[in-house]
Amino acid sequence: MMKTLPSVGLRPYSEDDFSILKQSNTPEMTAYLGGPETEEKLLSRHNRYVDIPDTGKGYMFVIWVDELPVGMIGYWEHADKGEIVWETGWGVLPAYQGRGIAVAAIHALVEKARSEGKHRFLHAYPRVDNGSSNALCRNAGFEFVEVCDFEYPAGNPIRCNDWQMDLLAEH
Ligand SMILES: CC(C)(COP(=O)(O)OP(=O)(O)OC[C@H]1O[C@@H](n2cnc3c(N)ncnc32)[C@H](O)[C@@H]1OP(=O)(O)O)[C@@H](O)C(=O)NCCC(=O)NCCS
Image (cartoon, rainbow, N blue to C red; front, top):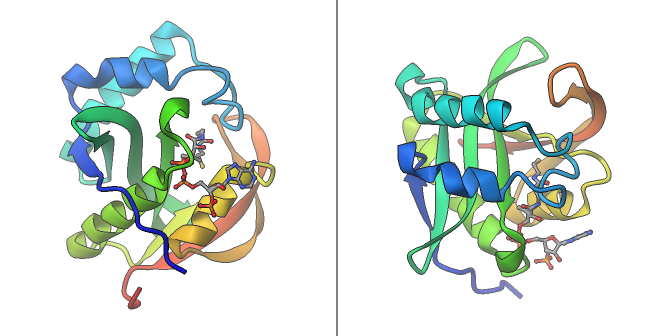
């Protein structure tokens, strides 16, 4: 039976959103992403997120529920076997996890990527041992492609599951 998903809003990440990035920079939130970043790296990530829409090569959003910022989700260009696809990544703060917020945020993001119409495929590459993110991909309608080698952060090799969504298909 389909669960009722919470109502979420995606607002473009802005200058004012550094605090949600900081709250996401904990050992728990970054366990599958290489661990917390230094203040300097976090600040450059913040600037990247603020600037990225101007490039047309990606977007980062803050996930809002009941007028509270509860996480982040984005999509950006990635070369996958010689083809440019959208890659997505996400985080929901621990206090808000387990309520379907991430599934709802993916649905909202898919609508944006679909209406933009730039690339046909949206991929996600959670680490093979990232139980919640792999469950999330399955629940949100991604199809499993294969296990693959990935680098995250740059220079750090990891084994990931490649999940794909066809933005042209009916969901
Ligand atoms: C991944 C994440 C965004 C999920 O957020 P969320 O709002 O709790 O997700 P949802 O409630 O929409 O769904 C999570 C699903 O994972 C399942 N899950 C949670 N922990 C799990 C685990 N260890 N193993 C398997 N499934 C798990 C939940 O049961 C739920 O599935 P269900 O609805 O079928 O029960 C959150 O855990 C997070 O921020 N993690 C840290 C950041 C991260 O690793 N990002 C990955 C980038 S690829």
